Image (cartoon, rainbow, N blue to C red):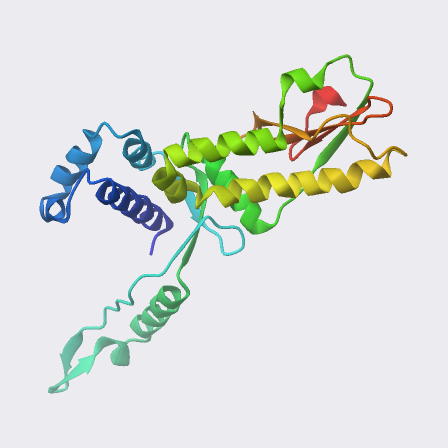
Length: 257
């Protein structure tokens, strides 16, 4: 149960399921050789199938991590314990060699627990996977910036949270099977947004005597700019009374300090 094998099998299964759902292939197609099936998938004009298949490549980096993981899979228990002819009778190898017994016990335990795989890097879908991983691990380390009367009409530049969610919902409906396969559903992104929004709405009151907002909370997605190759959501609150602006980001924005 190697982490890379678990990753490859998982994404291949998602790709095949999506292709079957979209009737790009049929069950009869799977009777062909592996190469024939892959060639058919690669020749498809469906961008969702192609994008999923693109996540399987030689440069994927994964590791086993039970605490912070993106995939958890259990495989059927398969133990290698052949019988050998010993003193005129057939005896299990594990009864003769302690090393074989110990290795089989370890393999059985791992199969029953399953493999927990953390995706370190897999290319252009890193941002979606990072959304899922952070939500699952419970990380919410928010950086807060109080900009005072910053000379910028924020309402012209950014969408409100509700407007952004509506756009996400439309994009999701256009590629629902693909989004479900990659991030697990639209609710994953909504939960991420709501987590940052709830933090911001409770936090800004600690720094200002004013509690009314000039406009609904605003949001924009932004690359983290680090080795994770991920992206996240940044939240903006504009106070009504004095026009002060608070920016909430899950990663540092040093140019606002």
